[in-house]
Image (cartoon, rainbow, N blue to C red; front, side, top):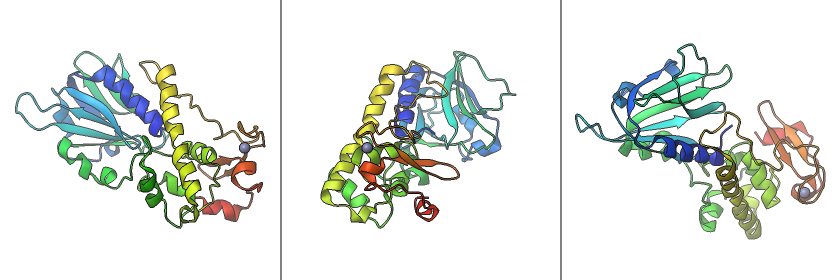
Length: 289
Ligand SMILES: [Zn+2]
């Protein structure tokens, strides 16, 4: 599942590869993949890509104003959901390619493709005038970006809620960019229990949480060093705690524990995060949903 560091490196690589490229045509194979109606995807034909960036966990492609009619710049907001990938290919996808959702065919023969793995079709795009993107409901409701970390005081204010840290930090309205993988790393970095409530935190604990957000920047630096021009389907994530249940804690050596859910797993160090308690109780695990 791509989160802030993965989408950031994706946007950087796409930006370098696509800036200035001309779109020949745009099409979507699934009706559900395009969540906007006006302007139609076809309005991208003949436009040049001004750049690729990221807002929260969403890539955004910016397009120059239309060269013929002087129509305004457009922006394509992309939501990868859990299994989407946004990649450039030298060759165009076959229309039988079941992973392809949205294809932007470029005049130079390449193709920018939104793909999705698995059976569910959940990834989507919205095309809109660039000036409207800040007002889009998915963007306007976002909390501050988790990286670079917001000022300490702003983070303290945002998380001062009677909610458990694990789901709250994954709530994009509270803070943008963190999902099920990186939340474990952030909480482990801060040595805080996923069950702690935001409003219960001492000043020192908020400071630790703030500092722990730096792991996102570390991950981006790691990707800068190891990811080539083409971001692979499976990006090896530099995770130290997430999905490492049963392994020794890289900091204290205690055995890492996990709470399992239908769709995700939460990993933590019992020694440093939960006062030695191993959280097995399903009622407790329900609190984390
Ligand atoms: Zn530990």
